[in-house]
Length: 205
Image 1 (tube, rainbow, N blue to C red):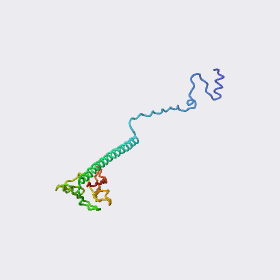
Image 2 (cartoon, rainbow, N blue to C red):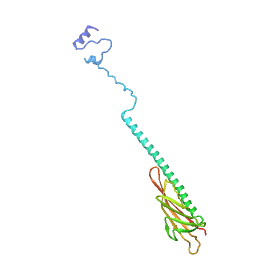
Image 3 (cartoon, rainbow, N blue to C red):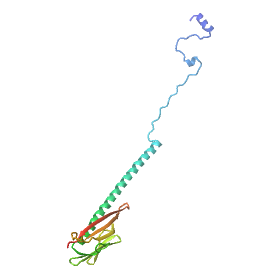
Image 4 (tube, rainbow, N blue to C red):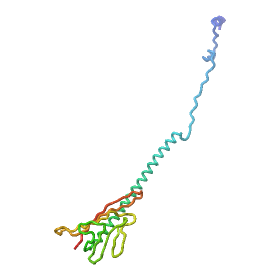
């Protein structure tokens, strides 16, 4: 660079140009160099947050509650069905005993013609006296001086009624007895289940 050019630079208040690496703008303007900040990487955490834990606990409680209710309903339904089946078997057995007692009957002593009674008394052709009645939920049969309980201890008999239906005016329908009773039992859940039974038996002369 010639002195002339150097003079012109000084006169104009400019620094002479030097070849080489260019200065940073901050250096030319008298500013301190700016530091570049680094963004920290998010740390990877294992496990569940509190909200996730509470959510999972709530879902687990709902599932377990529904399962418990379903299992209880199944056991309750099974208990009711078992009790109903027992009542059906016991009712068929009791109606069979009544029909068996009326088999071979000669006369109906109690109830009288057209009447209704909680006791049935008949006399058979061989002179045997048979009576059927109930007390405190138990159906009993009196045969030859012996008293036998017919239903089991898990069932109760109520509203036992015998009706002497008599004979028709033209003699087409023979004398007979209509029996009706209610049999009840307690299911495993404490529910009382009842069922009505009826039977009709005609006497053969």
